[in-house]
Image (cartoon, rainbow, N blue to C red; front, top):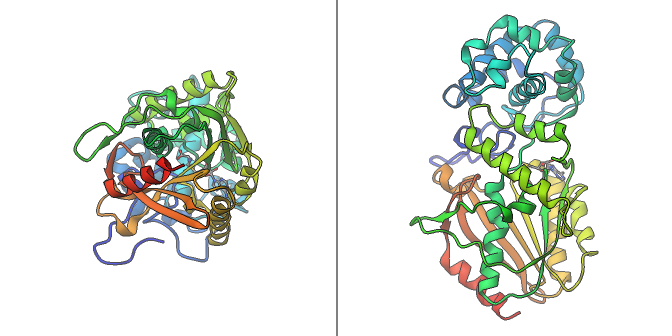
Length: 393
Ligand SMILES: C[S@@+](CC[C@H](N)C(=O)[O-])C[C@H]1O[C@@H](n2cnc3c(N)ncnc32)[C@H](O)[C@@H]1O
């Protein structure tokens, strides 16, 4: 998937991509390793070298984990991950770091790396070989359970622009139908209630991107293979643990988003989270009320799917757009597009698809942006086509 052509920008987690994203540089070639095969290389790999600048505490931890791999820690890890496939160089290192941080956040008074992983600012001098050895000891059962059972998972509400902006564009084109909002690959569903968060998007000239007014929302539903319910303290803690300890901006937005979701979760139009895989989503959408305009958003999910599953999902989504009435369903996605990017700032594409007429599928790239969008490079002509089509509905 990584672009091979000379001069083509290659995204790396260095440049702000989700730490768990299997996109761009660092993606392993075919013949995926399993368990701890090759982990000794990954822990010291260049692809995770960016940690040195961005998260010094993590940079300090990796060589120590590497050193421990030859002993009991490695044997336990091999057993815990015996059936786990590895898709990217940074996947296992970041999973270990998130699991350590989760355990430290869970046990702030007694964890051996508490000052390094659960305090702000994180203290690099609190990282030592004895502390790391104690943090991965067999009796740290919480750490080991997370290592066995979870995968790094984040939920970024900067990406809510994927639905907020198109919804506002439709409203200004005259759209009055209520929206059934569907978040595909929703994680904790935080983008379903991100209309309650401060807007933070601008165009290339610095003018605010208008995300209101919008049509009213009739329902909010999120699908994910492993949805997280942030009303459970453990799930919320896992989301926090997957954000790096120094990233106070992201942590602050996460706290706001969790509060917003929790407040909405008791109301009449409470968001609903459903566990299912992506290819199962289109058929479930057939059951939604016919009179609503279905707006699907999907952000940084596609590249998690094996090729066959992705092809099936995308074919089923296109079929859904065409079997519903024209302009009754809008599928908006924010996904990585490294081949056409010149920097991290424009490495993701905000694209919409819909049936403009019966049997006529329209695909428009409305903007290019960062995978954590704040600044949008808008294609005004594409915006005009979208608004013209929906003005007619
Ligand atoms: C990088 S997260 C993005 C979450 C959210 N869309 C966002 O932008 O913050 C990717 C999400 O896709 C989900 N996912 C991965 N593979 C999936 C599949 N085959 N079916 C459904 N969801 C999947 C993961 O559980 C995870 O919550």
